[in-house]
Amino acid sequence: MSALLCLVAGALCFYVIVYYGVFRGARCSSSVKLNGKTAIVTGSNTGIGKAVALDLAKRGARVILACRNRDKAEAAAFDIRRESGNNQVVFMQLDLASFKSVRSFAETFLKTEPRLDVLINNAGVMGPGHTEDGFGMAFGVNHLGHFLLTNLLLEQLQQCGPSRVVTVAALLHRFGSAHFPLMASKNDSVSAQSTWHNLQAYCNSKLCNVLFTRELANRLEGTSVTCYSLHPGVVYTELGRSMSLWQQLLLKPLAKLFFLDPEGGSQTILHCALQEGLEPLSGRYFSNCALQEVGAKGRDDALAKKLWEVSERLTRLS
Image 1 (cartoon, rainbow, N blue to C red):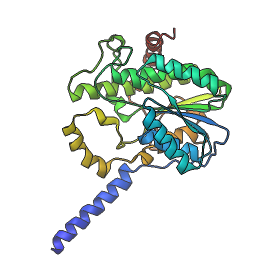
Image 2 (cartoon, one colour):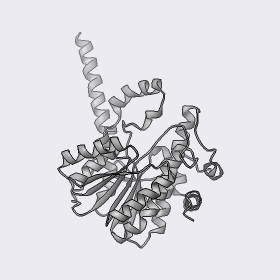
Image 3 (tube, rainbow, N blue to C red):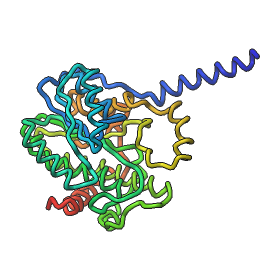
Image 4 (cartoon, rainbow, N blue to C red):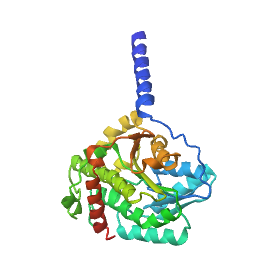
């Protein structure tokens, strides 16, 4: 029995060391207050987006929960207002899988809100299907929807500078590729395909997030707007809700043991949005609340520029 207890105790110690040393991650150390500032957080009705919105609300910001599902978002807004004591937390309808919805959101926001100081492009999906405009769901939502949203709000961000655009990418961008003919094709969707196809499409979209941020920084050089992309850590959220039941059952025990919770996963996002002195690092990529090197494709300025041009055409900005 004593040997068994020693084994259990050893396993527990190993888990604690690994979890707190590797998985739990760093914490945002900024104490900045945001009274009088306005922030948009996409996909903020749950997961790390909700955790980010709560932190910003506690700092005094007016927080716009830009979400697709009205019921969930209004419930999240109620929770955040109650926990933060900040009544300036409101829901605005945004479906990133629809260019029409993105344009409607931007139009409504610009008519009703006098300023924008922080835009956090957080929402993300991984799974099969098409957007309303016919693109693969991961590429359409994770990249094109946020690309269009950012561009439509860019003038407001510039008028209210210094301001920041923070885009949630992922470490998996290293496994992504930017195959422009395929991405531009409305047949580039993941429908009834394997988990591998779903994952590859997600990796591709995360590479797009990194490249988008790099080119955005190039175009904003000399202005009061800076931008950053990041890996939030391995977080247990609803991202895999489109996975099959057996896949979710396999993942859940590991996720509970080793993955960050949403509050832990929000820390690098908050670091990029709030940390003082990051302005010279605009366009760069962060992880664990620190500057990190991106994969080789993510450093390709020509690729970033080409993606921007393709995205302008696909979203009908050009």
